[in-house]
Length: 261
Image (cartoon, rainbow, N blue to C red; front, side, top):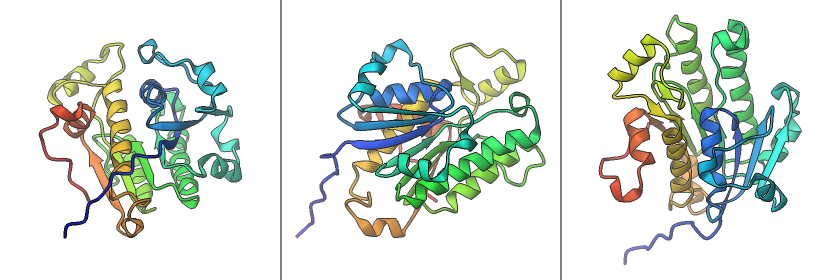
């Protein structure tokens, strides 16, 4: 007799987000808070309070009053103790990391690597320590740990460091040129976007991350349903085409999922 597997949908998710005030992060937080039937609590770790695009129709004050939204604010992410991070992550089903900068914005190569590599890995380790099953983060289409270029090498190194932690599921999003709603100002960006089939809207990236997390949470392969699945960690990489496909409503999805490593 065939075994009937029941999707794990009777409990809403508790998730943690770091980097929720950036261009993609605001859309992700908006998507999470506008779906209370899926997400019972959204915990934000950041340097300032979040603001959301009006399209999501979220009352942030009300969400905080109802304790569906928790915001832990610190001007310096390094100042948040390990114990505090673990407390914020405890009981979480997924951790979304949207941290990212550039060498120019960071001010130096060392500062860039600190945020894009060291801080990301530190928070990933702490989330793993308290049993978070799913780590979802953004790198780049050009990530390459062997590159001589700082940006590409750092993105490749952070992918390696995080996947080596062996979360039951790790989702690596590798977008190309992103459309933040301000247009592509640089000639190089316009050429790259053309070669990649168009710039990827940050809202599309955020939607893909949200849907990927909930699909995993509600699947029979989630450790809450199948504890043995945690013994076979899965790393799933999303390139631009995979991101666009995942962001589409289920009825429109007709292509195979991205390959698992």
